[in-house]
Length: 251
Image 1 (spheres, helix red, strand yellow):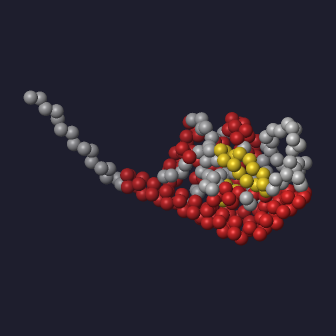
Image 2 (image 1 turned 90 degrees about the vertical axis):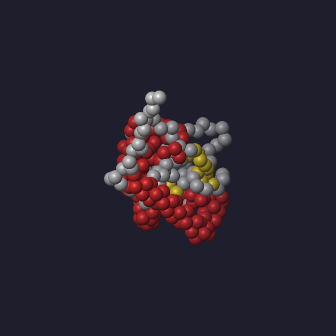
Image 3 (image 1 turned 180 degrees about the vertical axis):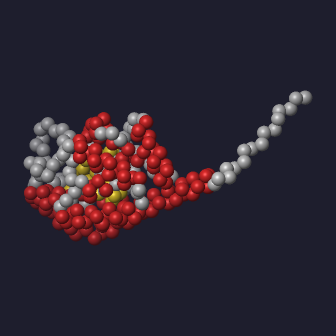
């Protein structure tokens, strides 16, 4: 009888590469969880501390212009198929997907803001446009809220709902997202992490007024994703405070 030759299993790698990958995966997973814990903690504390201010803002919006207190809008969130689960190397690999394939975007969620613009007349045509500081639709109260980024405070609840972080790339409207993904290289790569209320791009750049502005902010966003950590998020949060007080940057 003819017998098949026995095959010995391959020996484990001697260079420790598997242990290194496993160690990095565990570290990356722990780091990502710590990033999320920090953002949830800051959001929860922020809601408690800022609740009286938010009540005053709600009253001011309600009493000075017609329309709802909160403005809700669909935004493109994280693409969970490409989330950073395995540390820096996997984040680099996920970013590389955008160079080779066409991403489908991310999960669409409802983002909250204090209404800073006048409510459009019923039946009037509407389209998605970028807002700028001199937009004629901005109300007097809204101009103050936008100047100090106070209109973004309700997004702290988006953080608790798991749709956003305090720090991350700013989410965009689906219609604008579809336009920018075709015009700005690697724009969808921002979606591998949760979007944020503030971010590295926002503390370093002003409002978008051109495609060149968007491209520059994408560079900042991708730089943040590569070095994302709890300490980095905390640093950006601290840098956001002078941006709000000094009315610089764009949130």
